[in-house]
Image 1 (tube, rainbow, N blue to C red):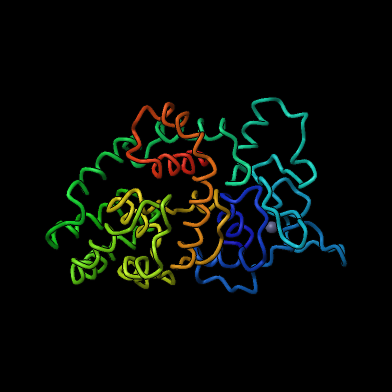
Image 2: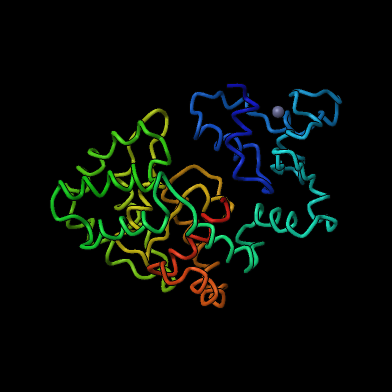
Length: 314
Ligand SMILES: [Zn+2]
Protein backbone atom coordinates (compact mmCIF):
# COMPACT_ATOMS: atom_id res chain seq x y z
CA UNK A 1 0.00 0.00 0.00
CA UNK A 2 1.35 3.43 -0.95
CA UNK A 3 2.03 5.85 1.87
CA UNK A 4 -0.54 8.29 0.46
CA UNK A 5 -3.25 5.63 0.66
CA UNK A 6 -2.30 4.65 4.19
CA UNK A 7 -2.51 8.24 5.41
CA UNK A 8 -5.76 8.88 3.53
CA UNK A 9 -7.38 5.72 4.94
CA UNK A 10 -6.39 6.42 8.51
CA UNK A 11 -7.40 10.08 8.47
CA UNK A 12 -10.85 9.68 6.97
CA UNK A 13 -12.53 10.06 10.39
CA UNK A 14 -10.59 13.29 11.03
CA UNK A 15 -11.94 15.45 8.20
CA UNK A 16 -12.00 19.09 9.23
CA UNK A 17 -9.59 18.57 12.12
CA UNK A 18 -6.08 20.03 12.25
CA UNK A 19 -3.34 17.65 13.36
CA UNK A 20 0.39 17.89 14.01
CA UNK A 21 2.95 15.77 12.14
CA UNK A 22 3.42 13.69 15.27
CA UNK A 23 -0.28 13.01 15.63
CA UNK A 24 -0.49 11.91 11.99
CA UNK A 25 2.49 9.59 12.49
CA UNK A 26 0.97 8.06 15.62
CA UNK A 27 -2.38 7.49 13.91
CA UNK A 28 -0.86 5.91 10.81
CA UNK A 29 1.42 3.66 12.84
CA UNK A 30 -1.43 2.56 15.07
CA UNK A 31 -3.09 1.01 12.02
CA UNK A 32 0.05 0.19 10.02
CA UNK A 33 2.73 -0.50 12.63
CA UNK A 34 5.34 -1.46 10.02
CA UNK A 35 5.36 1.99 8.45
CA UNK A 36 8.61 3.93 8.83
CA UNK A 37 7.64 7.14 10.67
CA UNK A 38 10.05 9.22 8.56
CA UNK A 39 8.01 8.33 5.48
CA UNK A 40 4.89 9.85 7.04
CA UNK A 41 5.25 13.50 5.99
CA UNK A 42 1.96 15.43 6.04
CA UNK A 43 3.47 18.39 4.13
CA UNK A 44 4.06 16.08 1.13
CA UNK A 45 0.28 15.72 0.91
CA UNK A 46 -0.56 19.39 1.49
CA UNK A 47 0.10 20.74 -2.00
CA UNK A 48 3.37 21.87 -3.57
CA UNK A 49 6.21 22.65 -1.18
CA UNK A 50 5.95 26.40 -0.42
CA UNK A 51 9.70 26.94 -0.76
CA UNK A 52 10.70 24.75 -3.70
CA UNK A 53 7.33 24.68 -5.44
CA UNK A 54 7.86 20.95 -5.94
CA UNK A 55 5.14 18.37 -5.39
CA UNK A 56 6.17 15.26 -3.48
CA UNK A 57 2.91 13.35 -3.93
CA UNK A 58 0.59 13.07 -6.92
CA UNK A 59 -2.27 14.32 -4.72
CA UNK A 60 -0.91 17.88 -4.84
CA UNK A 61 -3.63 20.29 -5.96
CA UNK A 62 -6.03 17.42 -6.78
CA UNK A 63 -9.43 16.87 -5.15
CA UNK A 64 -7.94 13.98 -3.19
CA UNK A 65 -5.13 16.05 -1.65
CA UNK A 66 -5.14 14.94 2.00
CA UNK A 67 -4.25 18.10 3.94
CA UNK A 68 -4.20 21.87 3.79
CA UNK A 69 -1.60 23.85 5.76
CA UNK A 70 -3.35 25.31 8.79
CA UNK A 71 -1.41 27.47 11.28
CA UNK A 72 1.61 25.20 11.54
CA UNK A 73 -0.57 22.05 11.49
CA UNK A 74 -2.31 20.06 8.80
CA UNK A 75 -6.05 20.26 8.35
CA UNK A 76 -7.56 17.04 7.01
CA UNK A 77 -9.54 17.75 3.83
CA UNK A 78 -12.60 15.92 2.61
CA UNK A 79 -10.66 13.90 0.02
CA UNK A 80 -13.89 12.33 -1.21
CA UNK A 81 -14.10 15.14 -3.76
CA UNK A 82 -15.57 18.11 -1.93
CA UNK A 83 -12.16 19.43 -0.91
CA UNK A 84 -12.63 22.21 1.61
CA UNK A 85 -9.68 24.54 1.94
CA UNK A 86 -9.66 26.21 5.38
CA UNK A 87 -10.89 29.51 3.91
CA UNK A 88 -13.94 27.94 2.28
CA UNK A 89 -15.20 26.02 5.29
CA UNK A 90 -17.47 28.93 6.15
CA UNK A 91 -18.90 28.95 2.64
CA UNK A 92 -22.48 30.11 2.91
CA UNK A 93 -23.43 29.43 -0.70
CA UNK A 94 -23.90 25.71 -0.16
CA UNK A 95 -27.39 24.33 -0.51
CA UNK A 96 -29.01 23.69 2.87
CA UNK A 97 -28.61 19.95 2.83
CA UNK A 98 -24.96 20.01 1.81
CA UNK A 99 -24.27 22.60 4.48
CA UNK A 100 -25.84 20.41 7.15
CA UNK A 101 -23.85 17.41 5.99
CA UNK A 102 -20.58 19.32 5.95
CA UNK A 103 -21.28 20.63 9.43
CA UNK A 104 -21.92 17.18 10.90
CA UNK A 105 -18.79 15.87 9.21
CA UNK A 106 -16.69 18.28 11.21
CA UNK A 107 -18.85 18.22 14.34
CA UNK A 108 -16.63 18.09 17.38
CA UNK A 109 -17.34 18.67 21.06
CA UNK A 110 -16.66 22.35 20.36
CA UNK A 111 -18.82 22.82 17.27
CA UNK A 112 -21.75 20.39 17.38
CA UNK A 113 -25.30 21.76 17.25
CA UNK A 114 -28.36 20.19 18.83
CA UNK A 115 -29.73 19.39 15.36
CA UNK A 116 -26.52 17.47 14.54
CA UNK A 117 -26.85 15.63 17.85
CA UNK A 118 -30.48 14.67 17.26
CA UNK A 119 -29.86 13.31 13.77
CA UNK A 120 -26.82 11.41 15.03
CA UNK A 121 -28.80 9.60 17.73
CA UNK A 122 -31.42 8.73 15.12
CA UNK A 123 -28.73 7.47 12.74
CA UNK A 124 -27.29 5.26 15.48
CA UNK A 125 -30.63 3.63 16.22
CA UNK A 126 -31.28 2.99 12.54
CA UNK A 127 -27.76 1.70 11.91
CA UNK A 128 -26.52 -1.88 12.01
CA UNK A 129 -23.37 -3.61 13.20
CA UNK A 130 -22.75 -6.97 11.57
CA UNK A 131 -26.26 -8.12 10.75
CA UNK A 132 -27.98 -6.74 13.85
CA UNK A 133 -29.60 -3.33 14.39
CA UNK A 134 -27.54 -1.35 16.89
CA UNK A 135 -30.28 -1.32 19.58
CA UNK A 136 -30.68 -5.12 19.32
CA UNK A 137 -26.95 -5.60 19.75
CA UNK A 138 -27.03 -3.24 22.75
CA UNK A 139 -29.75 -5.38 24.29
CA UNK A 140 -27.58 -8.49 23.89
CA UNK A 141 -24.73 -6.73 25.63
CA UNK A 142 -26.96 -5.57 28.47
CA UNK A 143 -28.31 -9.12 28.93
CA UNK A 144 -24.81 -10.52 29.01
CA UNK A 145 -23.84 -8.15 31.87
CA UNK A 146 -27.16 -8.36 33.74
CA UNK A 147 -25.44 -9.78 36.82
CA UNK A 148 -22.26 -7.72 36.49
CA UNK A 149 -18.87 -9.32 36.03
CA UNK A 150 -19.30 -13.06 35.38
CA UNK A 151 -19.12 -15.28 38.44
CA UNK A 152 -17.13 -18.06 36.73
CA UNK A 153 -14.17 -18.04 34.37
CA UNK A 154 -16.41 -19.44 31.61
CA UNK A 155 -18.80 -16.51 31.98
CA UNK A 156 -16.03 -13.91 32.06
CA UNK A 157 -14.50 -15.50 28.98
CA UNK A 158 -17.83 -15.18 27.14
CA UNK A 159 -18.22 -11.54 28.22
CA UNK A 160 -14.72 -10.58 27.07
CA UNK A 161 -15.12 -12.45 23.80
CA UNK A 162 -18.54 -10.91 23.14
CA UNK A 163 -17.29 -7.35 23.64
CA UNK A 164 -14.22 -7.95 21.47
CA UNK A 165 -15.85 -9.89 18.66
CA UNK A 166 -19.53 -8.89 18.54
CA UNK A 167 -19.53 -5.46 20.17
CA UNK A 168 -16.66 -4.03 18.13
CA UNK A 169 -14.11 -4.03 20.95
CA UNK A 170 -11.34 -5.32 18.69
CA UNK A 171 -12.43 -2.77 16.05
CA UNK A 172 -12.56 -5.38 13.29
CA UNK A 173 -9.01 -6.58 14.04
CA UNK A 174 -9.95 -10.25 13.76
CA UNK A 175 -6.56 -11.63 14.80
CA UNK A 176 -7.14 -9.97 18.17
CA UNK A 177 -10.13 -12.19 18.99
CA UNK A 178 -7.51 -14.76 19.99
CA UNK A 179 -6.51 -12.50 22.89
CA UNK A 180 -9.88 -12.91 24.61
CA UNK A 181 -8.93 -15.98 26.71
CA UNK A 182 -5.74 -14.25 27.94
CA UNK A 183 -7.60 -11.06 28.84
CA UNK A 184 -10.30 -13.10 30.60
CA UNK A 185 -7.68 -15.13 32.49
CA UNK A 186 -6.09 -11.96 33.90
CA UNK A 187 -9.48 -10.68 35.02
CA UNK A 188 -10.39 -14.01 36.60
CA UNK A 189 -7.08 -14.07 38.49
CA UNK A 190 -8.06 -10.77 40.11
CA UNK A 191 -11.82 -11.10 39.93
CA UNK A 192 -12.85 -9.72 43.28
CA UNK A 193 -10.74 -6.56 43.14
CA UNK A 194 -11.64 -6.03 39.47
CA UNK A 195 -15.39 -6.15 40.10
CA UNK A 196 -15.08 -4.00 43.21
CA UNK A 197 -13.03 -1.28 41.49
CA UNK A 198 -15.43 -1.15 38.55
CA UNK A 199 -18.50 -0.89 40.77
CA UNK A 200 -17.03 1.57 43.25
CA UNK A 201 -16.46 4.27 40.63
CA UNK A 202 -18.99 7.10 40.96
CA UNK A 203 -21.07 8.46 38.07
CA UNK A 204 -18.79 10.55 35.86
CA UNK A 205 -20.84 13.68 36.40
CA UNK A 206 -20.02 13.38 40.11
CA UNK A 207 -16.32 12.75 39.58
CA UNK A 208 -13.78 11.30 37.16
CA UNK A 209 -12.73 7.74 38.11
CA UNK A 210 -9.30 7.67 39.74
CA UNK A 211 -6.12 6.88 37.83
CA UNK A 212 -5.54 3.91 40.17
CA UNK A 213 -8.95 2.47 39.28
CA UNK A 214 -8.33 2.82 35.56
CA UNK A 215 -4.86 1.29 35.86
CA UNK A 216 -6.34 -1.80 37.51
CA UNK A 217 -9.14 -2.12 34.96
CA UNK A 218 -6.80 -1.45 32.02
CA UNK A 219 -4.06 -3.97 32.88
CA UNK A 220 -5.72 -7.12 31.42
CA UNK A 221 -6.34 -5.25 28.16
CA UNK A 222 -2.62 -4.64 27.56
CA UNK A 223 -1.56 -7.53 25.33
CA UNK A 224 1.00 -7.20 22.52
CA UNK A 225 -0.16 -8.32 19.08
CA UNK A 226 1.14 -7.18 15.68
CA UNK A 227 2.63 -3.94 17.02
CA UNK A 228 -0.49 -2.98 18.96
CA UNK A 229 -0.76 -3.57 22.67
CA UNK A 230 -3.34 -1.33 24.35
CA UNK A 231 -6.82 -2.64 23.54
CA UNK A 232 -8.47 0.50 24.81
CA UNK A 233 -11.72 0.35 22.83
CA UNK A 234 -12.21 -3.22 24.03
CA UNK A 235 -11.47 -2.23 27.60
CA UNK A 236 -13.69 0.83 27.74
CA UNK A 237 -16.63 -1.08 26.21
CA UNK A 238 -16.13 -3.79 28.82
CA UNK A 239 -15.97 -1.33 31.74
CA UNK A 240 -18.98 0.53 30.41
CA UNK A 241 -21.17 -2.54 30.82
CA UNK A 242 -19.80 -3.17 34.32
CA UNK A 243 -20.71 0.37 35.41
CA UNK A 244 -22.38 2.44 32.66
CA UNK A 245 -22.70 5.66 34.69
CA UNK A 246 -19.00 5.79 35.51
CA UNK A 247 -17.31 4.64 32.31
CA UNK A 248 -18.22 6.08 28.90
CA UNK A 249 -17.02 4.17 25.84
CA UNK A 250 -14.03 5.48 23.91
CA UNK A 251 -13.60 4.39 20.29
CA UNK A 252 -12.38 5.99 17.06
CA UNK A 253 -15.59 7.97 16.48
CA UNK A 254 -15.59 9.23 20.04
CA UNK A 255 -11.91 10.21 19.64
CA UNK A 256 -12.76 12.12 16.50
CA UNK A 257 -15.55 13.99 18.25
CA UNK A 258 -13.33 14.86 21.21
CA UNK A 259 -10.31 15.53 18.95
CA UNK A 260 -8.06 13.01 20.69
CA UNK A 261 -5.25 11.69 18.55
CA UNK A 262 -2.66 10.34 20.99
CA UNK A 263 -1.61 6.73 21.51
CA UNK A 264 -3.88 4.54 23.61
CA UNK A 265 -2.98 4.71 27.30
CA UNK A 266 -4.43 5.28 30.77
CA UNK A 267 -3.58 8.96 30.27
CA UNK A 268 -5.52 9.13 27.05
CA UNK A 269 -8.62 7.63 28.68
CA UNK A 270 -8.32 10.13 31.54
CA UNK A 271 -8.00 13.00 29.07
CA UNK A 272 -11.08 11.70 27.26
CA UNK A 273 -13.01 11.43 30.56
CA UNK A 274 -12.24 15.06 31.34
CA UNK A 275 -13.45 16.29 27.96
CA UNK A 276 -16.47 14.01 28.06
CA UNK A 277 -17.46 15.28 31.50
CA UNK A 278 -16.99 18.91 30.53
CA UNK A 279 -19.11 18.38 27.43
CA UNK A 280 -21.86 16.45 29.25
CA UNK A 281 -22.06 19.03 32.04
CA UNK A 282 -22.36 21.92 29.60
CA UNK A 283 -25.02 20.24 27.42
CA UNK A 284 -27.45 18.91 30.03
CA UNK A 285 -30.28 20.92 28.47
CA UNK A 286 -29.98 18.82 25.30
CA UNK A 287 -30.80 15.59 27.12
CA UNK A 288 -34.62 15.77 27.12
CA UNK A 289 -34.53 16.35 23.33
CA UNK A 290 -32.09 13.51 22.71
CA UNK A 291 -34.02 11.13 24.98
CA UNK A 292 -37.13 11.91 22.98
CA UNK A 293 -35.40 11.12 19.66
CA UNK A 294 -33.98 7.95 21.22
CA UNK A 295 -37.38 6.80 22.44
CA UNK A 296 -35.97 5.71 25.81
CA UNK A 297 -33.63 3.04 24.42
CA UNK A 298 -30.42 4.30 26.08
CA UNK A 299 -29.92 2.91 29.60
CA UNK A 300 -28.13 6.03 30.78
CA UNK A 301 -27.04 9.44 29.54
CA UNK A 302 -23.48 8.24 28.91
CA UNK A 303 -24.93 5.84 26.34
CA UNK A 304 -26.95 8.63 24.78
CA UNK A 305 -23.79 10.71 24.25
CA UNK A 306 -22.09 7.60 22.88
CA UNK A 307 -24.91 7.15 20.35
CA UNK A 308 -24.45 10.76 19.32
CA UNK A 309 -20.69 10.37 18.72
CA UNK A 310 -21.19 7.15 16.80
CA UNK A 311 -24.09 8.47 14.74
CA UNK A 312 -22.07 11.46 13.55
CA UNK A 313 -19.96 9.03 11.53
CA UNK A 314 -22.96 7.36 9.85
ZN1 LIG B 1 -0.68 12.36 -1.18
